[in-house]
Amino acid sequence: MAETQREKITKKILEILENEQNGIRYSVLFKKLTEYFPGTRPGTVTGSLRYCVQKNNEKITKPERGLWILRKYVSSAQPISERSINLPNEASFYQPFADYLEQDLEECTRAISLGGNRFGDRWGTPDVLGVYKFSETDAVRPPLEIISAEIKTDTNQLITAFGQACAYKIFSHKVYLAVPKEADTSRIESLCTRFGIGLILFNANDSQDPKWEIRTRAVKSEPDYFYVNEYLQRLGDDRRFLFS
Image (cartoon, rainbow, N blue to C red; front, top):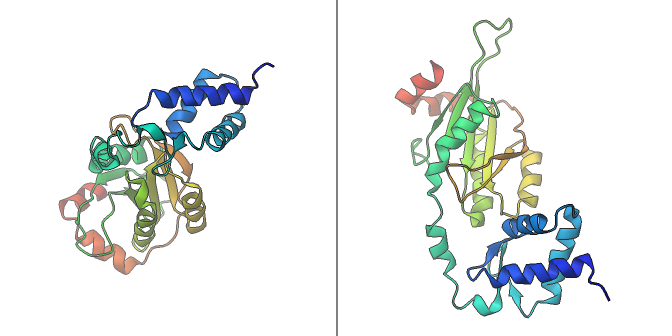
């Protein structure tokens, strides 16, 4: 009896895992399968992945969300904490995202990398802060808009990142949250839509080419101008740059 497409894909999954002793991310595995089986519907690939892990539960395990590995490799695999050390530093994504807000999304006329504890309080400091300033030649010039962004490379910190993004709405007209593509973003995307926060996915393995991908646009809302003025006072020279 000829092999079904699902059986062919399952066999290829096991073959790929055999060559990945440190495991492989779901998103990378999915991409490899679509390349091996061009023209196959994404739903068929997704269904085959589910079928494979159910049928081969004694062979395949997922030690952390989104990571697939053969059970026989678990003891010898490089520890997860050690693998994360090889990822680019989170701060290395701040300026690329500031450039993305300016040049691709055109949400800002000026954007800068912040991070750290520049605002000096427990509500946190945005990783990126930008402004959208209307041109002097525009017939109608509304007040400028403030845009904040939170970037997280750790997929275990999505709820923390979402909470920080919500806090930024108190002094920002628009807020963006950027998280790795391999993260389980279904709930975060739903929350971002409900709260008007923009969601961006990116490749956390390469700060030189993060491949930013927009999922939801930020919705404009009015901040509390008391806090707008309070936080802008803390920017120092960066304030003059943003508003120049």
